Image (cartoon, rainbow, N blue to C red; front, side):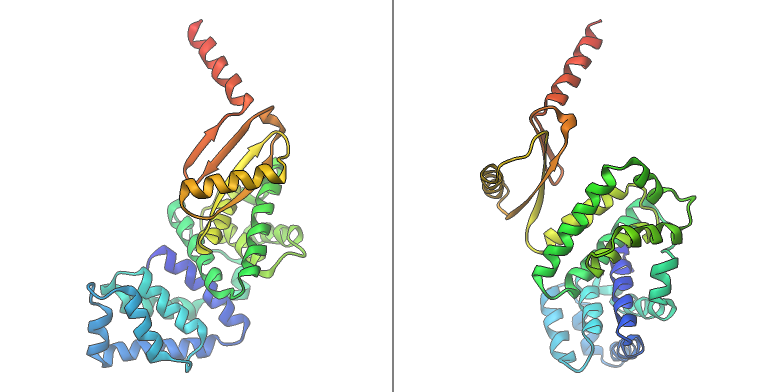
Amino acid sequence: MKSLTWGYTTGLVIEAQNSSELERFLSELKVFNQALLDYNELVTVLEDPMVSSGSKVSMVSDILSDRVLRTTKLAINFSILTERPSELRETLLEIHRKSLSHQSESWLDTGSEPMSSRSVARDRMLGFTKFYCDFTVEGSELDVIEDQVFGFARVVENSSHLRWALADLVIPVKNRVSLLDELLKGTHEVTKKLCKYVLLAGRMRDVVSALDEIASEISKQRGRRIAEVRTAVDLSQEQIERLKRYLSDLEQIPIELRVVIDPDLIAGVVLTVGNKMLDTSFKSRINELAQELSEAV
C-alpha cells in the first residue's frame, strides 16, 4: 500500500469509528475483497492497465450503488485511482488489516504512525488531507478549513518557542497533541485533525512547511493554487485583486493569494507560487550586496 493510501485510510477509519460504522465498513470491504476472488471478470477489468481509472471507478460505483457506506466507496475508489492495478487486491486486504487494528479516537489523541522517512510521512499527510477533501462535502467548509490551517501556520511561524514545542520529538506526542487542542479551540473539527496529523504522520519536523502543504493540497483539490506574497507593508484590495488576475493568467489556473506581512523585508515583496519564487525585497538586495562585498575583500 502506498503511503498516500495509508494516510487516506487513517482518515477514513477515524470517521468510520466516529460514526459507529467501523464494523459495517470492515464487513463491506471484506465482501468486496471476496468478490475479487469469486468473479474473474471483475478482477480482469480492474487489473487491466489499458482500462482508465475513471472507467473502473464508474463501473465499481454502479456495482456498489447506494447499498454500501460512503466510506467503503471512498476506500475502493481511492485505491483504484492511486495504486497499481496489479496491486489492488493486496491493497484492499491491507486496508482491511489496518482498519481492524486501528482504534481511531484513542490513536488520534495518544498515538502516532510508525516512524518513517520524511518523504513517507509527507505522503501519509497528503493522503490524510485528500481523504478529508473527499469526505467534506461542502466547498465552503473546505474554504474555512484551508484558511484556518494557513492562519495557524503563520501563528507557528511567528513563534520560535511554539515551533520548538511542536517539533521536539523528546516531548511525548500526547503532550504536543494536547497543546494543539488548546491552540485550536474554536476551529473546525477537520482543521484540528489535519493539524494533529502533522505531529502523528511519522517524522514531520518542519511543522510550518507541513501546514502550508496541507493548505496547498486543499487548494489544489478545489482546482486552485496558492500563491504566497510576503510584503513589508499591507497591500490594498485593488493590488491584491490585480496580482491575483495576473498570476491566474500566467499559471492558467485560479490563484488563491495569501498575503503575509513581514516587516523584516523592509521593502518590496517575496512571491512564491509552487516551487517558483520571485524575491524583490530590500532585505534580499542588502544580502546580495553584503555577499558581493565579502567576495571583493
